[in-house]
Amino acid sequence: MYGARRRNPLTKSPIKSLCVYCGSRAGDDSIYAETAKKLGESLAETGTRLVYGGGKLGLMGITAGTVRDLGGDVFGVIPKFLVSVEGVLEGVDHIEVDSMHERKMRMFEESDAFCVLPGGIGTLEEIIELLSWVRLDLHRKPLILCNVKGYWDPLVKLLHHVVDEGFAAKELKEDLIVVSSPEEVMPAACERMLCARA
Image (cartoon, rainbow, N blue to C red; front, side):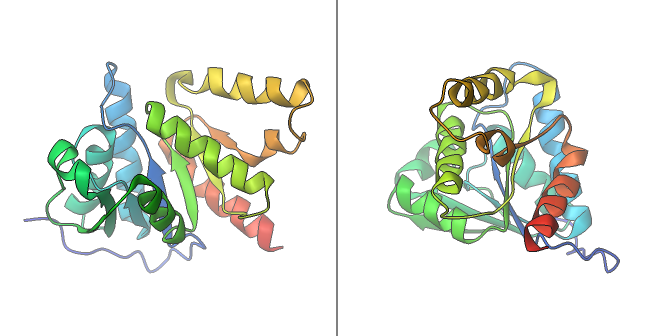
């Protein structure tokens, strides 16, 4: 069985649900799996619901499985055509949707903030879409990039290049909050949300 539901009564976080984007693969370095596990532990400890892509593979499965095993809340959103590919994690709430677009919209609607762990093309797509929506004033939800092992350094450099060459406003550099460890994710998201409300 999985852990009993836990809530930390001393935690008054403005972030009730955190959406985590990450790979359906675990990567070649064990630090990526360790990072996913530590983030899952942090979410369970703070009573923050995890919203994720619904599968049981890779970093997605590690993060969600950790939250579940420690008694935390997990909500997965997976397209029907991916169920046979990625599987569905047992013991968590999830819904099946018809398309990738519907999946992304539902994950967005269910979340107060976003965290990006290492991942592939799909993860890149999700980061860029959320940044684009910020620039279009469609949302102001915190977006945290967990840059473990400098994985996202090339992306950060590219985004700065886009700004420096005049193809995006300088505020783009501030839209993405870059941290280097999973322990920094929730404090950074909470700080950004509180600043936005001030």
